[in-house]
Amino acid sequence: MKNGLQFATLAVHAGEVTCPTTGALDTPIYQSTTFASASAQEMAEVYGEEKPGFMYTRYGNPTIHALEQKFAALEGGEAALATATGMAAISSAIMGYVKVGDHVVAFRDPEQPGARSARYRGGGACGALAWRPFDD
Image (tube, rainbow, N blue to C red):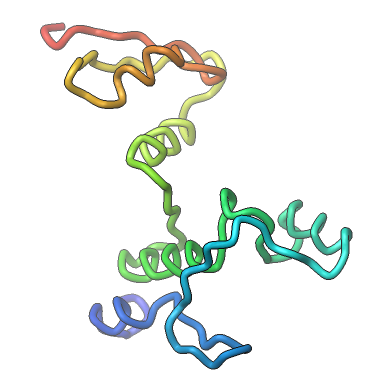
């Protein structure tokens, strides 16, 4: 492993920090959707990614952050991204490479759960989505 720790140790401890309030060793499951800050300025800095913190669970929370750190450590990566669904992961991967005006060519598979969703979206702001039959 890159940092000298064994895989099993990383699986248990990576991304974990002792809670400063309770002393808990395990990351709690934060079910809050929103987070408070000391001031509007502080929240603006968090929102602008000038300061670490959390504002809205859709953009991350301490539980998700710990999971991402654990995955990055286990995979030997610099960072990781956790998504709520497989389609969100696939979309994030594609959106990272596709620029405005690019085309995505995909095979239409009626058995694929994401086919219907992608068909209705038609490629969105990233470019065109072109369907091809399997025999092409």
